[in-house]
Length: 103
Image 1 (spheres, rainbow, N blue to C red):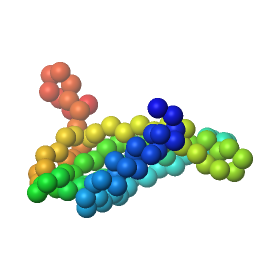
Image 2: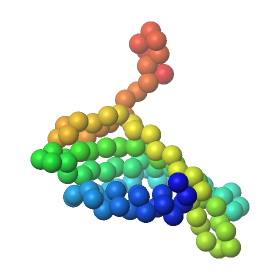
Image 3: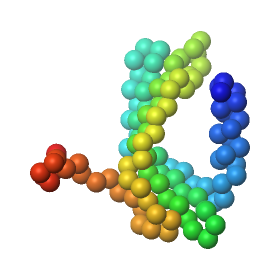
Image 4: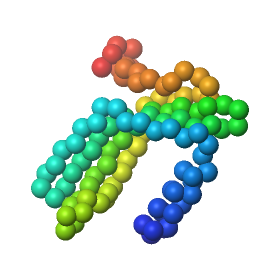
């Protein structure tokens, strides 16, 4: 799928969601010449039938400056933990080693 088709599909998918809310926490931006990297926690929720789905994801966007315009060259999102509809908002959990101690 090319960039235009991907953007179109993403816009259509987001437009179909009911009661979509999005927010960003822990935003960090680093710029290295013509490359910028933004890392953050993406919080979002939307209605799904009678339930509300809530999610948190670690997010990274890599930008490239082309003739003064910052364009997204790459994005990556990873769920922090799964959340259930109408359940408590998901929270990050400490990693544990095989013997159960925290890392």
